[in-house]
Image 1 (tube, rainbow, N blue to C red):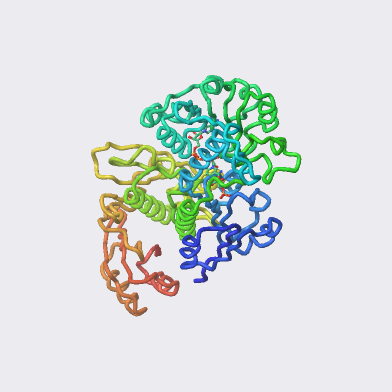
Image 2 (image 1 turned 90 degrees about the vertical axis):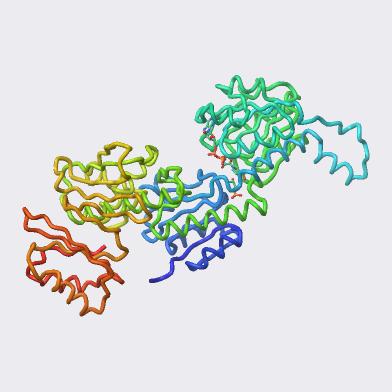
Length: 519
Ligand SMILES: NC(=O)c1ccc[n+]([C@@H]2O[C@H](COP(=O)([O-])OP(=O)(O)OC[C@H]3O[C@@H](n4cnc5c(N)ncnc54)[C@H](O)[C@@H]3O)[C@@H](O)[C@H]2O)c1
Ligand SMILES: O=C(O)[C@H](O)COP(=O)(O)O
């Protein structure tokens, strides 16, 4: 099998590059010229970008080789997620891996402004020693207003408590329990947050609120505004005006509506604006954490797995063991069902038995649909584009939940046709096939399975075994099931290798054999 090719367009921690090089050919740039990305992207299976590059729809389309887009960092606003989902391209990022770095950067800005560090430094370099001129203020006892109480916002709150600040936050998407657990007062509107924020710090995605003159002028006189999240959310001209008026004490920006900012950027002229070139995630520690998490996600996605840091599949927060068995079970039940039922004109019913987490249902649906449709359609079908493909095909999947006190299991059938039921039990590390097309079975699902559907007649097992032996393939296990009414039997062989096409062709020559499937 040819090794996948991975393109890295910006500096990535060496630990991540080393991991990727174990499984792929990697071309790593410190900064690929922007215009070159569209020219070479088609030659790669995966691309890893940071904030310098953009991947809009027109760059992503018609790239049959591209399977994974990785944002080595947190914000995926520079990737067209909708287009990736449509094209079945997995998007992964490194959520939280640079959250401490970003939160600490925000406090770097706050302290620099409050203690005049940048001004004092310049003064000393010029030979000055005027201590009175640089009288500062303390974080202690100041009120911090946080917009966006996610990973970075919560780190900022933890640091703020260390400085003994009072912390308020606005985030309508976070539960009261989270606010309480972090000892932070919930504020329900931006209008109410502003007057209690001696320091305002932003930690939302780029799609977060727009903060203009109207809101900024509600901050107390002498307030500080810090943005290490994304540019374009705060009106930069309004910040300059409020600094000029003396309403704001200082402004700290790590991100800008245009990066780098243009020559006439309104805050360049202001000494109390502290500006850094998008350094929030740029610490040794964060670079390593981001690189490793990104590399793991890219490798898993290239191998057809669903990594926990995939952005465009609703992965539930389960332990790796819980996730692994459900994922495997969903794929097995979907694939077997699709092999046995080629016409899917009525809705499919997925029954969840036992204690299967409710928040896993959307992802399970997508995984099962992908498993079913990938057996039936050419081209790329995966959990990323499963819903789009299902709609194109007119395929409906209904979900029903059976009692939580049963053994955990997934079963799939055509609505109104219990004889089509395929069921796998999930109570161990390997899914156990319990029913296939209504026929009872009991076997741990093997890695290389060969299945025959044949007439329920004597001698078939021997004929199949002999033929497999002639191909010098070892049979690890053999399981039989039968539907006496239909005079039909099933045989599932666990082989030491995948059955070659020639073997399948020869098996189909045996008169009693009706169908042969390779999994
Ligand atoms: N400067 C840097 O180098 C740097 C480094 C890391 C992260 N970031 C940026 O920081 C931001 C936060 O990152 P994170 O990892 O904490 O993300 P996150 O997804 O963990 O948290 C974002 C929070 O914002 C909240 N939110 C969304 N829309 C909102 C709205 N309209 N009003 C209020 N809250 C809203 C969400 O509910 C969520 O809790 C992102 O924009 C990320 O790209 C920048
Ligand atoms: O979203 C992020 O992770 C930060 O903005 C960091 O961006 P960077 O990878 O370009 O440093």
